[in-house]
Image (tube, rainbow, N blue to C red; front, side, top):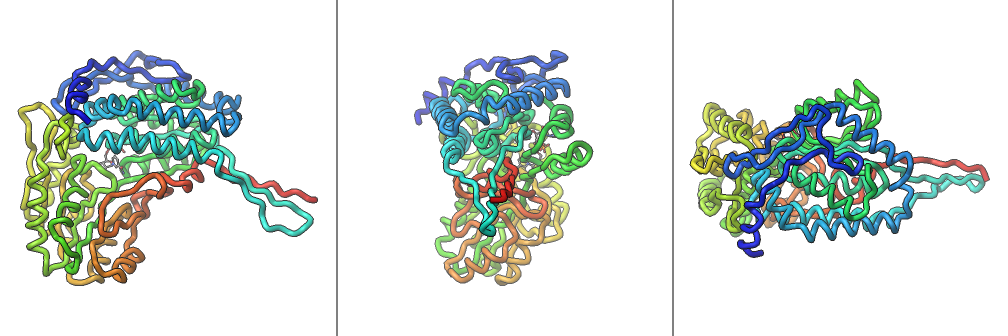
Length: 494
Ligand code: NAD
């Protein structure tokens, strides 16, 4: 990738965006818009439609109509698969444009944005497109005179509410399986990261997805998100974001039509280093990368370092050294390791979390402050807080920013106790050269993912989902299809 190609795209004027409903760009019913502020320099990038409940109802009606008349679900599997593959091709062909647009919108460093956003989105769409004619129903092992036939049917209309950190990646984790099995989707992007998802939906139309099958409504969570959650005509709600919003969605479901709600919430993932692990410099680099990439705005970020007490001092020094190589900078520069924090609001929350950690007795050994303020953008130093106790707020509460807490442990038992001492259970990491210990840790850690001797790697073939207050139901892999289908049994007397 050439820097000049990125530079050429990074000053393009971004047109004002509208909703995408029934295949058309549509302004809000009351004409409302909201400014899109780039976290790179705090400037106004463009505007998006500030949707109303009426806009959302219109999108849901369009999705329902598309589902009922079967324009997508009743197409032969091979035809649907062709569309999904073409869509993946188009995402790849437009990858740089999408990555630059996304970085300008949400501040993710471009090298990561390119890989984690369009390229991963294309892989996800391709994977679920390929799955369309690979999933079979079942014949139950019944008595000889009956036939028990089990099929998976699309649920109908799926609402997907997406956060701002990796909109294309997280968005396609939901849209991919939902569309592959024949549903219609109404997508509600985050206020501060809508642009790439609108473009993604335009590319779907270009690939041949019929109008109305994928609709996008932008605007405030408390308005259009709420209307989606309370709708009597949405069958499944798939969400990634904060626990507070997750709770609201469960309430919306209870107050409306009992729609199924799948929640992918936050985490406070432990990154555990045992004293027998070799090559501390390498591990320190993985620990720093595991929390500081994308300014810590990663749901699986390894935000709690748990390190065995006899190597703690040396190891923390090694992490500090690795972190000095990760200076925040302009997200549109290829060499930038840490881009901007998504919004001014999020930056304030991060700084507040550091103040609270200090109040609780933590010791800031690196970073802790806003930086590059003269750019007008929202940047924060990668921050390491040592001496964090299990009762401290930094140990317990997700920051969703570039803040690593450090806590030491005596032995394996204490490491497990500390790892499992929060309400969350999303990801985790263990560094050990002892294979038996590695397996014991895999069994003992309460989390959806345990990384061993690495951190953060995965692809679409494996599920990602949390336990506890990190949520329910997994994104990715063939298992995700279950969220967007109903099982139907036919019991036939022979
Ligand atoms: P959020 O939950 O407020 O927003 C996520 C999405 O939900 C957005 O699209 C938003 O518009 C929508 N939303 C907000 N209020 C809503 C409502 N009342 N009804 C329906 N939809 C609503 O999260 P945020 O403000 O973007 O981030 C706050 C925290 O969320 C972070 O600090 C972090 O803890 C967590 N988070 C987690 C992930 C993850 O990947 N697990 C991603 C983003 C944010």
